[in-house]
Length: 589
Image (cartoon, rainbow, N blue to C red; front, top):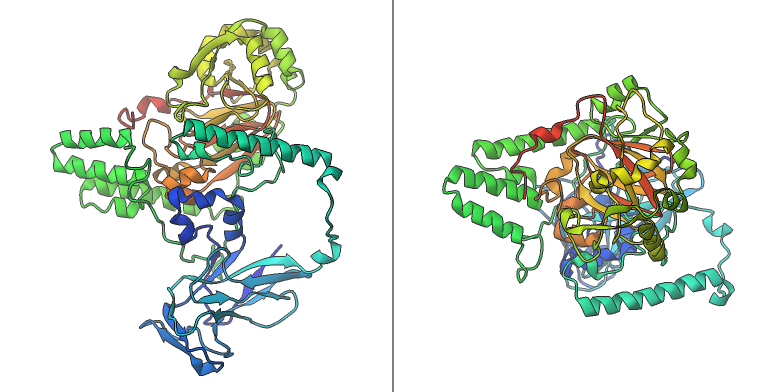
């Protein structure tokens, strides 16, 4: 649907997609308030109009227009709030006539969960599908003789569309929970699991913030670990208004609030930063020291221009590099479809090379391998029967470790394949046992019996065996990038991925090799420690059986399995794929 804001000559409404951030939520320990997903979704579920000026105002308690005193910041111009209606109200004029499709209104009020001391927003519902009128946004003082303040570009109005006839189709009612036995059982399962989880937290006292709260609702999972709604949202992505020049409207964004020391609390110093500190002590050359400090600032989430403000050449080079990446990403965003990963069917080699491989653009090829026999054959029982009791290598003991991917060698385990299948089905969902691509070399002989069930991807791959991933629902691969171009082939089950382009690296606390300290870009516990990551551009992809996903080298991604899943990773492209050979050896630990 379209929402249009018509403007007269000289009108300049300051509109932006609403921010999920709130000062009081930022101030909570570890920003734990953001763990309440309904709060964060409500905060961002619409657009904000921003104050054209900074000002202070006070109401003396009387009913008259002149009973409100307004002091405008110097140099603010004529677009200012006024006392218009009396009764202790303050009025903002909105420079725009909004038009919505037939049957749709605009709900207009203050930004949710953003109280202001001494004054409160008044809400309204406006029939914007037919009315040729502007509207005003009004606030009413709640305390007399108290100065309130709005900063320039502080939101004064929040709006979103609502369907006018919606309530005509609703029949609200109350019923006993016993009338919905499946819902009742699921609720009781959740209640028991929550009690067990709280007991586990009390007994083990995990140090990682992400381990101290249950994430079922946040991740859109039912108590048994299975997906809830297919369109579950963990973040709202409200589009920007398109300006008169055809480009997205550039309105000020909320200021980035980076903690002075992201990471664990001071009582638990970050060993990586201690190591870097020791390295800095060894580097007596001031030039090198300043440039390493600049790099550390960028990794911690500081704005690239601020972090690279040093006059040293390497410091400028870091800033210029990030600037070039950012500008390229902005320009790419102007193209149609740039807000999503492109989806196609099976591609020829030349199409894939020209459109995706050479320009390093991800693509999903839907149903491209549906003709492979494995798509129909590979049930867990079939795999168990074919591979049998052959000993395989896997990753185990992952639940008790935060950096299980970084220290993969510490988690190598061996067991009979049939026992592995039995164990992951007994647990139904979890991240503790997982056959990953890292185990492929060790498992090549055992899984070779499956090769005849796989097809080929001619003119794109050379025909080398793929690297298997086998695990239950809930297996998770944290945020990272790879040193090769990868082609993922989903054979069994469903996987959900979040991808981020290389331009976002400076926001992702890239401290160690190919990994981010932001293990899960959807987890508010990590965003609390590294708030710059919240503004990183993200793309979401769900892979179903028969789908291929091309991930270019350097693209960040994280992966979660929604159910029992088998996937293969291929890197044997017919074109050059050796970026790992020139990856800087000093990139991380």
